Length: 353
Image 1 (cartoon, one colour):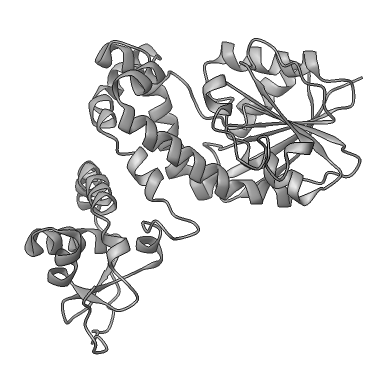
Image 2: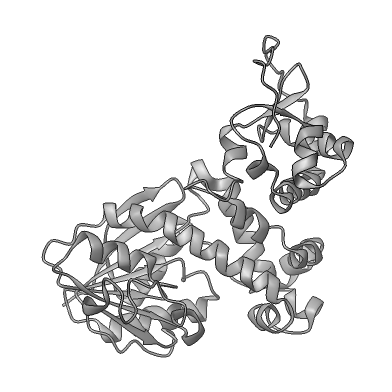
C-alpha cells in the first residue's frame, strides 16, 4: 500500500467540553450510524489496509476499492469516537481501538463487531418496546422461526460470522480462565456447554496431569478444537461428549466449568444446574463464569448484550445477586466471586455433602 513518507503534522489537542444533555441525547439516538460505520470499516478491511504509516483516504481507497471522498467521511466519523485518528495534514492513523478491527491483531474484535451488526439485528432492535411489553423474544414474530433455526437454515453467512465471533471470544478468554483457576487436587475437568473447547484445551495444556471432557451440542463439538480431537496434542487426555446439558450430563469430574450458558430463560437455567448437581459427586467444584450487568467497568457493553438476548432468544444476562440466587436455589454452596478479566466473573461453588 502507498503511504505518506513524511512525519504528519499535528495541532495541539484542545480539551473537549462535555456535551450538553440535548447534544448527548442526539448522539445516542444516532447510535445506529456509529455501529454501521464500524461494520462498514470492518467489511471493507480499512484497518488491515492501514499500516504503521499514516495514509490519506485516497491512498486507502485504492487498496480497499472504494471512492475516496465517502471513505474520508467514514473515517472522519469513526475518528470522533477514537477509532482511527485524523491528522492536520489529512492523513489517518491507527489508534488502540482501530487496531482491534484488524484480522491479525491478537485481540481482534473484527468478528464480534460484524456479529453485533449483522443484518438481522437491524430488524429486531426497532421491536425492543414489544419485547419489553411481553418479556419475550420478538425474533420469531419477525422471521417466522427460532433464532438458531433461522441462522442455520436461512442465514448461512451470518451463522459463519457467529461461529467466528464465538470462537474468537472463547480463544481470547480461555487463557484468562486458565490463569485464574487453581487446579490443585483436581484430576478431571468437565467443560459443560464449552463450545469448541478452547478453555478446556488451555487448562489441559497448563496442567499435564489433568484429563478433561468437553460437552456441547452435536453441531458444536463437531468443530472442537483440533488439540482435543483424535490425533490432536491433547487427545490422550480429552473426551468429547455430544449432548444437551439441560437434558443430563453423563460426566463425572472433580471440576465442572459452566461459562456463558446460563443466559437462557429461567427454566433452561434451572434444568442445566439441576443436571450438574445430578452428575457431580459431593465436594466437586463448580465454576460458573458469566458477564454481569451490574459490573460497572463493562455495564454499557453487557447491558446491550442483555437487551439483544431479550430480543433474539428471550434470555438475559445476570446481576451478581440474580446469579447467586439461582446457584443457591440449585443447591450449590457459593464461595469466592472473582473477576476473570474486564468482562467476566467466576463464581466458585461446591456441591454440598
